Length: 535
View 1 (cartoon, one colour):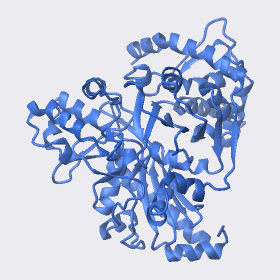
View 2 (cartoon, one colour):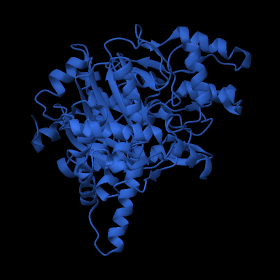
View 3 (cartoon, rainbow, N blue to C red):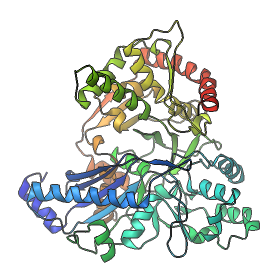
View 4 (cartoon, rainbow, N blue to C red):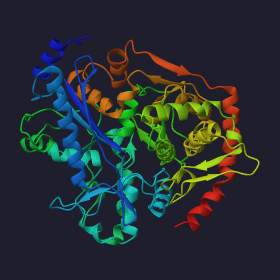
């Protein structure tokens, strides 16, 4: 591997690199890789969504401020480490938090604030479209947001000229191309697995469904083009180069791969593209994706059917809430330590408290919690209220408290996985984990193995996440796609020789989670009461 400074400097100057930038829920991250697909520089920018008029959103100004800051930080690191100015790159790719709703008029004006995956406001549309197509249309999908806007008779509905996702929007602004990678596109509208394009029969059904609205547009005319991994998706324009790098150092003409969602980049980053492979991304939200051997027997509202970036069918169980609530509790414990005059580092705080969870009772000692910061479609909540409950007989200890917060972070996810494993008989050999849930060594893996009753592995590169995954897709686009499939490319080129740590399910932990899970579902009425009465 070319890891010495001189070789890396030469690769940077020759443009034998690839850049991936991902707009995640709490962080925008940029990763630059070399010819060996190893990260050589990175940059980042923290951001948070806002609840504006009961809509979870990010402003487009914040999008560009974050993208520019991430690139600027990465370019500064390149200069500092390798003594060279970043002027050209072999290929670039963008990814973002999945799906949502971003619509523009014919003059390219944003018609309504970006509606993120976190919103659970499209239940009526989701249910109606699922019935219409006999195909699962989750609430966060772009088509569900579009149809809900039509049902609500929102003023902007007849002005729409283009609908995309946040990754598709950034790509469009930088290249001028209105395209999406097939994995991201599969959460905008259903994909025909034969053509790997939007399903034209479903498009016709939708147009007939809304024909009486006289909208002035047909669905096919406002959707982006769909491209599979390896296809060229345009190049950086002169205006796009200045938008990404206002310093003017970055040159135009750099090729782009199709923009993807964080689900697809997670599959790439964990080498989970082949049939019977699976991955779980656990952070602000948590979702498990399993590449299917065959189609499911019927549509389930709890299960998304999406695709890999290569266009193969994937079942996804997605929960809106994962680490946000226990992050808040850990921060509270940090405040307590500071107040007592015994401050500790964030890393030590997390590692100490999360490791305590492994010392708790298998079923969390009778404790119950819900980390529903937002609504949770998997258990049919349009709003959420973070909640902790115990009885007088519960074993209330710090270890059990930390354990129940980790268990409940996976409660909704387990609801979806039970459908796949128990009702559909889906087989998966191993699930590969990535995301903040796994950052404290061993803890997240052990808890996830208990919840999914499946071996959980974490790769050495898992911490690089989706930004590394989209950088890999960018490299594949310009380097290898004519010679082998994406799955073979990942196996033979990117992950060859990579080590992973596998944790097998502990029978005692599995039994404990099963007891907790019954309590979790029995207690949903408590969560419902909190939503109804706590404002």
